[in-house]
Length: 322
Image 1 (cartoon, helix red, strand yellow):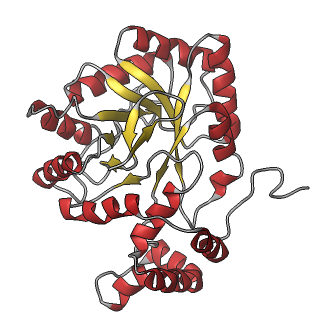
Image 2 (image 1 turned 45 degrees about the horizontal axis):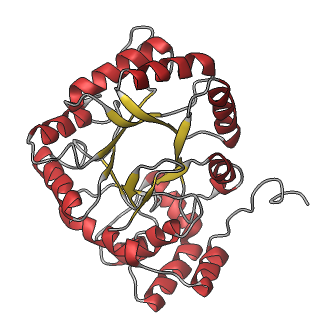
C-alpha cells in the first residue's frame, strides 16, 4: 500500500479509504469485520463512516466499528478514523445540522458508539446555510482542545464554501478544513471547475466518493452480458444515456489489459489534490481489485484517451470564459 499526507497535514493515510456505508445494508456484521481486518492486512489505515450510516436506524455502522475496535489487537490505534455529522438523528429540534449544540451532542454520541475517546477526522456532511462559521469553528475549537477530534473536514461543499470556511478559520487562528469529500469520478467531474482548485489552494486533501459511479465504471456492460448484473430505473436510464461512452471505455480497458474498476480508481489517483478514493467493498475479496489500482500507472496517452471518452472541465473561469 502507498501512503500520502492528508492535505497540508502531517497525517499519513493510505491511498485508498475504506468506506463503510454498505455495512448493515448489503454487508452483515461478520463480513464487515472481515472486510476491516482484510483492509488492515493490505495496509489500508484510512476508514470513513458517518453517524447516519446503517439500518434499521442511524448509528448502527458506527456501533459496528466500535465493536470491531473493542476486539483489540491495535485495531483502533492502526486506524485513521473519519466520521461525519449533519443529518438529523431524531425528530426533535437541534438533532441535526451544525449548530454548536448539535456538534457537541453528535460528537459525544459518535464517540460512545465508536468506543473511542477521539476521532481523527470529523467532517461536515453538508453545508449548513443557517449556522455562521464563527459558531461552527468555536464548537470545533472546543472539541480540539478537549482532545475529542484532531482535524476537521468537509463533504459536498462548493468551492466558495471552502473559501469562506477557511477565511473565518484563519481570522480565528484555527487550522480549519484539511479535507473535502466530494462526488468525483470519470463520469462526474463537476468538482474540477472550482472545488479541486479551491482544495489545492487551501491545502485540502480531496476524498472522492462513488469512484465507480454506482458501478457504471466497474465493467457494467460485461457484467450485463454475463447476466451478473441487471440495472433498473434511474440506473438503467443513466446507463442507456452513457452507453456509447462506456462501450468505448470498456474497450480501452480491454486494450490496456486491466479491469475497468481498476482503471477508474487509478485515474482518480492521478488527479491533483486527490488523497484517497473511498472504496466500499461488500466482501473482503472485493478489496483485491482496489489494491491493484494503487500500483497501476496510466501513461499520458491513456489519460488523454480517457479525457476524450469522458471530457472533464478546466478550472473556472477558463472552462467557460477566456
